[in-house]
Length: 389
Image 1 (spheres, rainbow, N blue to C red):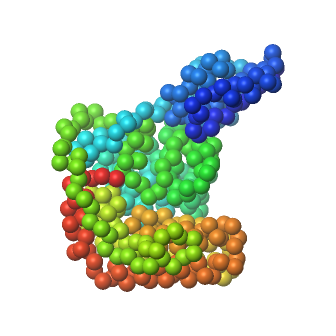
Image 2 (cartoon, rainbow, N blue to C red):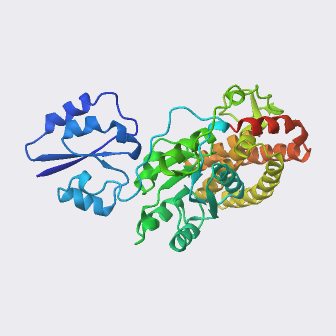
Image 3 (cartoon, rainbow, N blue to C red):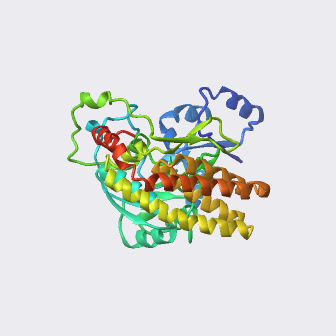
């Protein structure tokens, strides 16, 4: 007999008629079709069941799943997503701070940049979870072999061992931790990134910088609610937050690929919301960013001097992600340009783009050293009142 694995696209079409007609054109009597869907497509699985007269399997598939499929075993009899908990559907609305759900359990954040570590840990801890940190994939594998966790947030690009390799090793564990839900965190915004993460064995995907209105639905899908959380009454004052003040520091855009004449050197509003308005923590994070980025820029210059474009791309990606979490938009944009050029081996652009990154960083450093925190005190109070994302 002929086995056909039908891989569903990330975004399901409104109608499967066209796909059905294509399949009917080549269908044979002994053909068996098995639909493979993403975990979040469970509620849309019924048309696939009807079309293929088979129960869908769900990504990521393991070797054992493929053996079951080849043996003719139905998904309902044993798998598709193994023993991992099924993702729960989040509500359509984003809760205000007074309505935010509280979660329980232990969460491991695997992230190599200290700025990103602090922001992610603070955000998830504010939602009720116990949070531990791992600096890279190798450390995460070691931790998970010794300690129980309920959920993992896994950065994709890290030194020593990246998130893809770490996930593959975790999935080979002989313990219950092999089935722990793993959420990919990536600053990439490229087509196919989500599928790459899921094919590596991860269960879901969230973009960096983390935003609370994106984080809560992910937590609702994979984390368990705190048993003591009986919901919170609506907070009318939080429904209509006061207008946010305009960013304080702007300058002219200098890079070729941008579409506007102005851009933001520093806009900490998003970071303040993630930190529940704690401007003292934000000040510490800013100092940490300046220190770590000085080191990263030195390593980046060395990588470019040695024509090591892979290392240069990784370092630019690291700077970009931390800058996004801090709200250093000018540095983020410049680092992104350099990252993409290094990936594309655009040697003629790299030196100029490196100068741009260094220039933007120095402007940011000058601004932050001018002690601008008093000017953001109003925004700090606003962030404490709303807790938005």
